[in-house]
Length: 266
Image 1 (spheres, helix red, strand yellow):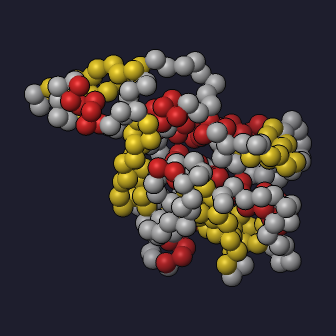
Image 2 (tube, rainbow, N blue to C red):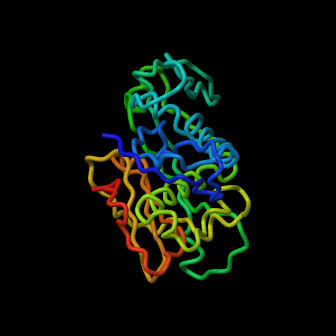
């Protein structure tokens, strides 16, 4: 069931000048049904739509087709797969129904803000998780096409992926605390592409707090020593990595759950 909450101001630049469009906390293209109404101006929407569109359209495209998630584009019949032909990779077409939909997730160092390490900008990738979410197993597909090796690649443009994760974390904080309940949103400049400090606020700590297999995606939020900490796990159902985001500082007197919005997690 979808759930909507009216904000009446852009959650990014705080303008109340319209027109203001709705914001999905988890992208609509990932079947996110939790909506902030009248929450994004055109200028900010153009910025966030650019990196969100890249991730959904390129990084997650195979998974979205395989899981039959929402798409504004027509149905895709086949996908290109790279197979090893005597030491050289060749491209073949595989039907979507049988394509081994694999997502390559980067993992990052912990948020620099939390561990106090020396930090000069950007974000430090320290690993990669490979998760298959639909289709035949890679081994089955490889055998069917007479090869022992398949190659999967992902094109992560700039900081599009961590900015998307930060956007989800921030949206949950707005829903739970209200826009006026956030004294300072640390992640906003990075989300809007105005700073190169996404790794200061976002990273991985190797823990998994979102583990209920009932949910495709999960988000948790807590306030620790006056600071808003969110955890985001897209494709949690399939064991994808979990990300921690230091969203910002809560305003004195604000209370989590002000809007009585049920959480996006169990």
